[in-house]
Figure 1: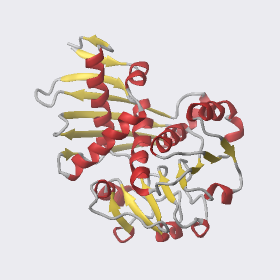
Figure 2: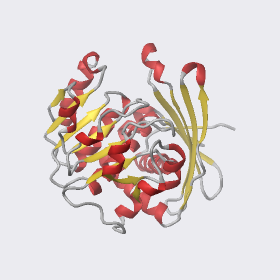
Figure 3: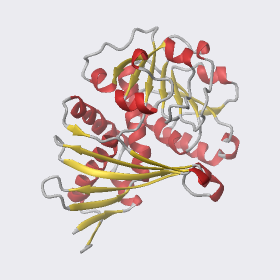
Figure 4: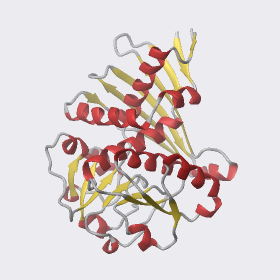
Length: 316
């Protein structure tokens, strides 16, 4: 039998707090060489500006084995459809049997946010209380949820060309986070915050790196090609750059080289690398790794079994 978990099932089982804890443990597993994670397979659907990815991981310490299929179709906004969609399958690591199929759309957002939460916990100043965010798309909610989970945030400043069309979404997010959100087109006012998040599809830098205040922490989650970058070379040069996984970042992130990477996230979590003084600018570049999806899916599957949630189906 295969357990089938819908979007609603996943939503009822996954919290940002539990996801952040799982992400932290996942990167420790990675540092202990307990993760096998092949390069993601990618197909570009050029006529629709679409991205189709296949991401697989085996995490021996967690006994987690699975694959995510995820799509990103930015033009879906015109069709009133989600831009990011996905499905995850889990396999029994002992027998090779398919044990679960679950909706992966929420997981993609939550785990991306959760990794930002981990990075913010270890890289931002502990007294950080304000956030400036570029972007009001699908990922923005999860990014803000995560940062507000690890820091006592009292102010959010948002910059997005489509923000005025998303009043209902922003108002609901404000209520969910219990933090006031100000829409601001003046980029300098967005940068004048303790934590900066770039969550856009912009192929080119969003701001001048010379305008960033000392002591700022930056989370960059958009731009996943060598030809694109949400931040300029000045920002990278002024920052202690931390990546989720070095080889993936070197292969897929614009502007990232071995010479400008300060550390991998796992080394920061384990305390192998001292992170900041109060005046340092830190920057976390998130690429999105398959271990994040599979460990999150494994967390959800175990919770579903414990709580008796989902429907069992027979495929053979």
